[in-house]
Image 1: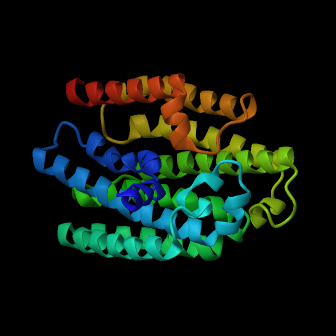
Image 2 (image 1 turned 135 degrees about the horizontal axis):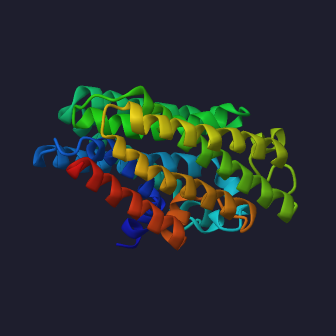
Length: 290
C-alpha cells in the first residue's frame, strides 16, 4: 500500500489541473454537446493525466540529481529515495501502454495526439529542455496538444483562433515558469550544475520582455477570437476576465515572486481561482442562452 501511495504521489495528481484544457473544446461546443461527448472528454482527461504522470516519472529520473538540490523537489518520492527507480519505471511502463491502447480504441486521431504528446515530452526530457527558447515553446506545445486532443476525442472541428489562444497563453505560463526558476537560482546562489543548464542562456530582463510580448498578443488574439469565431458577439463580455487573469498572474510573478507552478497558483491564489470559475460560468451561460 505504501508503494502505491508513493507511486500516486510521483504521478503528481495535483498537476493534473493542466489537463483540464481537454475540456475546452467541449465547453465551446455548447449547446450542441451530448452525454456521450461528456464521457469521451472525461476519458480524454483521464488518459492525458495518466500519460502526463508517466512523463513526470521520466522527468524525475532524468533530473534526479538536480531535484535533490532543489528546495521543494527534493521531497518527491524518487528524489527523496522513498520510491526506487526500478519500481517507478515498471509501473510507468504499464500505465503508459494501457493509456495508449485505450486512446487508440476510443479514436485513432486522439491516440496519435496522445502518442505525439508523449514523444515530444521524451524529447524534451532528454534534449529539448536544454535549448534556449525551444524549451518554452515545447512546453507550450504540450498545452496545445491537450486542447487539440480534447477536440479530437469528441470529434469536433477547431478554429485557428482556438489554437492560437491556447499556444500564446501556454507560452505565457512557460516563460513565467522559467523566470521563477531563474529567480530562485539567483537568490539561492546555486553552484553551476545544481540547476537547469538552459537557465544560463536566459536573463530576467529577456524573460520579462518575452512575457510582455506574449501577454499582449494573448489578449489581442483572444479579443479577436471572441468576435471572429462564428459564435455570439456576447463572448466579448469575457475579455475583462481574461485581462484581469493575466494581470493578476503578472502581479504574482513580479511582486510575490511566484509563477513556478501554474497548477499551484490556480488552486492557492483565490483571485485567480475565482476569475477562472467566473470565466467558465460566464462562458457557459453566454453559449447556452445568447
